[in-house]
Amino acid sequence: MRNRLLFFALFLAVSATAAPVHAARIHGFEVSVVVDGCETPEYHQDGKIYVEALKGREFTVRLSNPTAERVAVALSVDGRNVVDARRTTAQGAAKWVLSPGQTVEIPGWQISGDTSRKFFFTETGRSYAKWLGDTRNVGTIEAVFFREKRRYVLPPAVERDLGSGAREEGVRRQDAPAASAAPEKSAPEERDSDRFAATGIGDRTDHRVRWTRFEEEPRPAAKIAVRYEFRRELVRLGVLPRSDDALASRERARGFEPRYAPDPDRRR
Picture 1 (cartoon, one colour):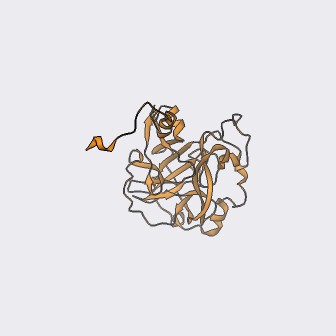
Picture 2 (cartoon, rainbow, N blue to C red):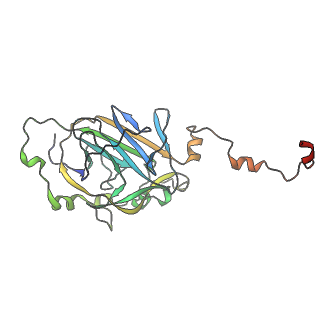
């Protein structure tokens, strides 16, 4: 097991947030997509979890650690690690470190030690993945939870704050993607880029983090994937039923019918 990895840890106190009602849960670990402070409803079909993408709306990803120990969470949106926008394995990814019992919300792509840029639902053609040049994995949010490796001897140096130098080493610059996240060859099927949902890189927001050491167990404790699509695609997939919506009713409207005007006196 390697000791070299550095992981992200929130500069926040342990949260007292209650378990989300609509959160995807495995072994107590939870992931939910939050819009306007509310967990979005989830739909289960064929072993997959779906949520509806609301075009133009900002969202956060809520992560919950139910255990009495620290855990590290590799989180990707559209196939990209939200810490550094790289494509790696879950084992090799930079991770968020959650304290015992902690629930946190990740607001966006982390662009520095103090700032992230907000997630929002958009078309694939206008997504961050499109800007990075690889849209093969859009429409997916995935969190992989790792327990901390048990240690019988804890050297004092292991838990020390690594300082600003370590922070600068691990964070992508604001004005350009990291070298390893340089644009790749796009997937050939781009004709429907405005038809399917993806995640954009939005406004800046304060989100202070620091680097810390964490040695994870070799096998993940839980892996949770959530698919998101626009409503019309969820209907096409059979995740949502076809409905007789207001627009369909308007299409059946007629200008004239063989009827007479109602007489108020006849209703007395």
